[in-house]
Length: 108
Image (tube, rainbow, N blue to C red):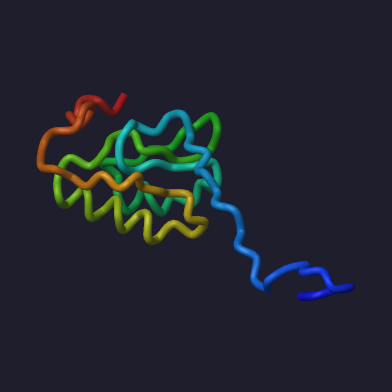
């Protein structure tokens, strides 16, 4: 748009990229939950082996990264189903190798 002979804008303005503010409890790895979480329970129902609720603060977090193709698919479904897009991924796919903290006894 021109005003007084000066270019003010070229039209559409792109929003700046939002860097996720990951919750501290999320296990290191591909999937994470950020501070937009509204504690709706979708991820915990969809992928209970990977998401837990932080009781005191009232949000979900990834307590264990996926350790199998089935868990990977469930985490992806949880991310796709999140109503506020609070679940993200850093792009590392399941490799078939055990993930640190992936033993079932690590839930506590």
